[in-house]
Length: 255
Ligand SMILES: NC(=O)c1ccc[n+]([C@@H]2O[C@H](COP(=O)([O-])OP(=O)(O)OC[C@H]3O[C@@H](n4cnc5c(N)ncnc54)[C@H](O)[C@@H]3O)[C@@H](O)[C@H]2O)c1
View 1 (spheres, helix red, strand yellow):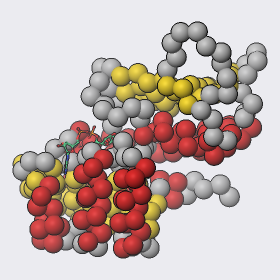
View 2 (view 1 turned 90 degrees about the vertical axis):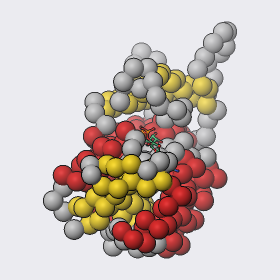
View 3 (view 1 turned 45 degrees about the vertical axis):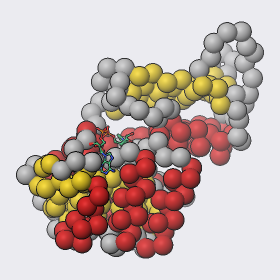
View 4 (view 1 turned 60 degrees about the vertical axis):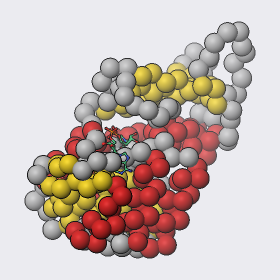
């Protein structure tokens, strides 16, 4: 039985992960951490300032984090202090926060950190990379849509797409939305939609003369992220200290 603690347990993703953990026969939900005390599926949720006491008492194998950027950094540091492996899905991290989180994990625990746990999105990133290798001379646009409550924009998933494109076609200027008169240059256009209960949609458009290739992924339920996070939970236990991605979990690195 792997013992799991969920940070952000009272939130949308944390609640979904907690539910799937409690339903899995090989996993045990030992409790949660959030900004305020409460319960999740009958297990104690403690406020963030009690995380050290809680980890020392519950001795989880894995800490899952779906919170906010600043909290995620502190939670990974706490996991490292208590030798607890980490699975982090929180997005909106600044480069400095990402570096701080990596440094905390690398020194002492294995951590899977990804902006998107969906298996489909990880395959989608792989396909975007392969397409970009061959279509560097096409115009490229990135579009994403999410529910009205999402705070960070563009999404972490879209930022990962931009990193993949930079790596494959060379760093190009990014243009976030267009208005007014302008020439199309070498930029990558990035377009963000927020509304309703859209779970998560991403498209990369490669436009050439007389033809377009459009790669899209649509998540229909947030349980796809939670199911991916559970795959990471099962995989990360016992790995060497360091930072891993879902490409490691799913063995998606190019051969
Ligand atoms: N990687 C992925 O696959 C994936 C998928 C969906 C969402 N996300 C990201 O996960 C994060 C959470 O998304 P959500 O939709 O569940 O948001 P949410 O607002 O519903 O939940 C966040 C929870 O974190 C709690 N929280 C805030 N500060 C905290 C702290 N210091 N300690 C513990 N808990 C704290 C909040 O009270 C809230 O309950 C966002 O960054 C989102 O972009 C990632």
